[in-house]
Image 1 (cartoon, rainbow, N blue to C red):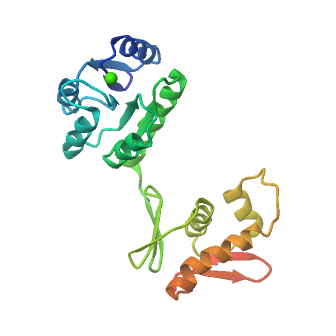
Image 2: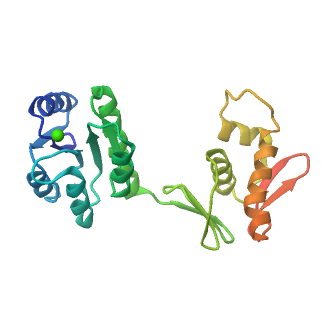
Image 3: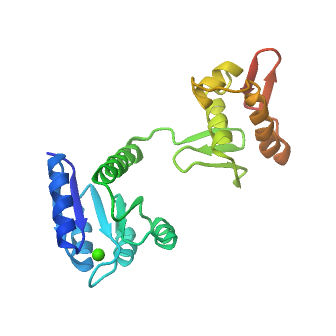
Length: 227
Ligand code: CA
């Protein structure tokens, strides 16, 4: 039996089309045509994922989500008719895991569903969401870095580089190894990218907080050591 999906959508034709596609993919599907019924079903705890339209009769999708999040962490993908940034932002703020803008290709929706369901599995089984060295903490899941509890803004590359070094704490990583795991094997460009990004990290972490986090091993590479 596949995962159970609740589809809260008042446009009957669209709901039926999505239901058929989901069933074809092996999911089991239940539908609700208004917000109140949707919330009731979503709160029953019997679903692995909720697809939630925003413009709904009786209770808006936003309100359903807001009330649902008080009691449930079930993954929610918002279906929004308007390609409005406001909807997306407030949807994600109020605890939606993702959103799809209508009209959507069914393949896109299916991909988002798989990702959201995977994310749910990860949350339950993740064993090391936190990496740390001294006072530096990197939260893999939330994609956040902090030093002494103070958040530090890193770009994606800086984050990935720091993560790689922390995962290998105490081991010296060569520039080539870092390039491979952070930039990927097909990286074309200057090998000194690693040095450039190490410099960025040092200025945001070592210099900004007066710590010695990233050590250079001459002629070899870099290592993060516990002080
Ligand atoms: Ca609607």
